[in-house]
Image (cartoon, rainbow, N blue to C red; front, side, top):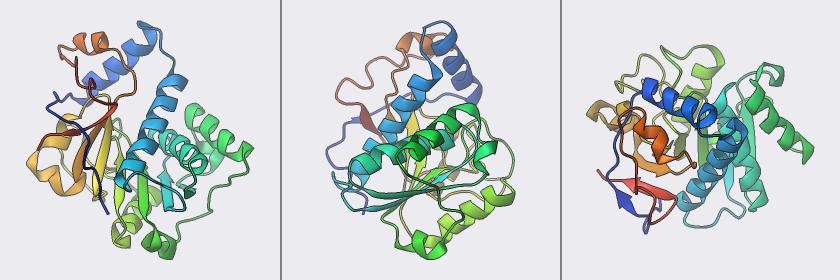
Length: 246
């Protein structure tokens, strides 16, 4: 059940995928952050959002993370590690062979392997249907066009499961700028977007795919958003996880 009572509610500016890419670049190249740091911050924020979603405790809750090959997949893998540490019955399914993971998600995969966690070999539809929560980490804001292959199959299986879905940053298959769904698209119960909301999350036609919209602080400095003309100051003065006002 979706339980987000008590989270601060804020009005936040939205940005395009191109603006977010510039902010991410500036955070690393100008303001001295490391990609590994940002991914770890995102992973913990997602795990925190999952705990809030589940009423404040993840102990013994069945959580299945669906991870793609890119950074959203790395966020899902890292969040799984935190959730396991907090007592969840968490598992992960990767949509590609581990050797096809990009460098940052591969590091998260190896961190899970080091504590004895191996991804499930494929999507188990019965397990999805029985899950307390599914984490959608298949595609991120840099993806474009209709999902295909195993990614599309994972999306369709998650949507068919009937289980609650928490999308990471953006529902997989949703255009980050327009909110269009050119193919298979996750219909999330809630979405935890990172840094700032992407423009497509707020358009009316995306509402049934986004669900409730949460915003998580991953420690990108507000000055980085000023480079793209956006004022992001003061969004997290009451907490690192907030609800975006309807």
